[in-house]
Image (tube, rainbow, N blue to C red):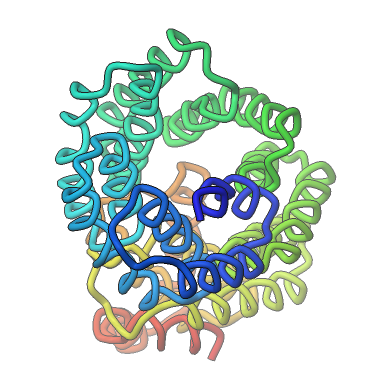
Length: 370
């Protein structure tokens, strides 16, 4: 049981999530149900893997057992791990922040080298701030994470070079974003972490597309898609297809762009609950940007009404979560929206905008191209 709970890095990093869940659930079913650090660790591992294979409700069931058990065991480090996982998967972004704020003071009770495990907490808090447009505060938390990482001599697995690159992208500094995200990709190659490598390859392909490095962007997107496909990561595949669609658009390959964005939004629809609540974390910056790219492709495909609806939906959802699309995308949308409005009558434009305000997120994704 203890060994199974410690194999999270292998099952997560190498993409063997289904296998990991099968092993863990079998072991948990046959083990002593009494409170123990080993059982809590195994529950924590399976609860963190289940959302990655589409079993969010089962994950929530396991997590409901975790927090009370961790408090009963009176192990501060174990409790921080439980709270981190709950913050990662349960509730909206504000709830996640509160969960992390509950965990951070517990590190004062940890006196050995495990105190350095605060690094991913700072990083995750930075992510939550970045996703809601609080870029300066996000940078401060990434810097805190880096300071602790360096002071403990932790590996490059915990570094935030790429996140500084994402912030540079939001500032419109494409050369710096490219340099930092490229460095992050190489770091992930060195430590051979397939999941994190894939996560950063798609960001690298995005920046390369903006810079006109289309061939290398294509190569990195394809490598990323293969990794995501091997791991069964549908959300990752949807993100990559959105990037490939925008890349095809830049090359003038409109038909290919339509195909990629249709598939991307279809997969996002399959993963998105029937809600328009902006607090639900299935509404991510990546998804909003994918909708924006779909609008650009619809405009290029001579579908002005669909493009107008998609652009209005981007404004709606981005405003709800305080997300700002990267400057290259924002500028492209502004220019395309102007052309689309000219192509439509006043009534057609108003109808498209009204549709965007009323339609559910799932229906929008399914009906994007008519």
